[in-house]
Length: 375
Ligand code: PMP
Ligand code: GLN
Image (cartoon, rainbow, N blue to C red; front, side, top):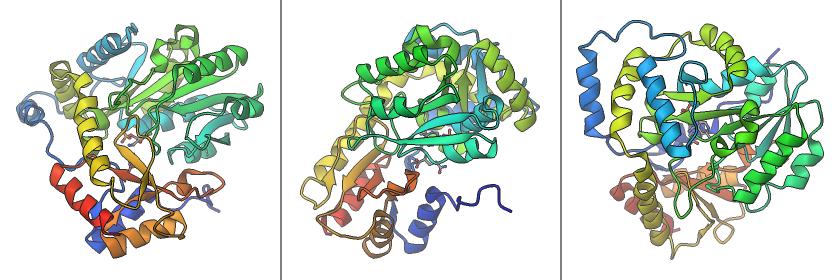
């Protein structure tokens, strides 16, 4: 009997495969298609000649842990102990799985907000937890009455994702304040804050959970170097947790991966302090603006995009197909692949909204826009 009877192949694999088979421009799965920083390649090549090829210490290369703590200090003015409160992970995905496995007991409830990133629910289910899926509102922002109505003392965790994939929305300060109040009201509740797009924000910066001191003893965060340094294939990230929770998380991590790719850690330890992560927002804002301006005369209705490298769009002036069917048609008939949003909803609710990834070079954005405007 399957442990995950309702889970198929992730939409990202499905759509990227269909894009390749259809020779379509792949704006589905989120990954950049432009070269990485040459400085990063240079450091990598040099590190390969050094003594960095054996197991890193279990929690991470100490130099990298130190650099991560300085990044968090400079970004959010939060001081963390690199040896006790930070863990290097094989991408945010492994971090999320490890956190949930370590902290969620059988029958513990975990709130996730739909449309929710697709690795959350299976991780909860596999560990015996109970996912409580609460829809975000029509603007993809939290509905605090709906959230609070499902929370009780059996609820062990709420997972938030800000900036949000797939919608590209960012939470207002009032939403973060509401989260803080919720955590203070329910002493059993932990927060897992997935902030993998933390540096990809546009008109306004996101307000990180890292700045909420009153919930530090309940707060776990995950970040991804894949997003921040355009290296999604390296599968490198990190998590933070208060010491008491980190002890439990490390118990799982040591038997899950033991430690993460030693070469990549050594490279990132040297590279990280040389990069201004705050410039990433401007870099991607130019891409968003280009994509939005090129689609202005299309029949797609673009929705707000405050951060991430995803632009959502309504297509009701073009088709009455379901979003899943429309994405297939778009890929196979019109040569552009996108992601349907309904697959991130527990109840499958279809708002006829799809997601495009604009982390692409200018030429790709122009070519894709031309095809999309012709529909
Ligand atoms: N969370 C969200 C919201 C994501 O979009 C992603 C993937 N892009 C991840 C987690 C996983 O990140 P990683 O590739 O570092 O495992
Ligand atoms: N997070 C990426 C996205 O949203 C995909 C990651 C993956 O393929 N697992 O498109």
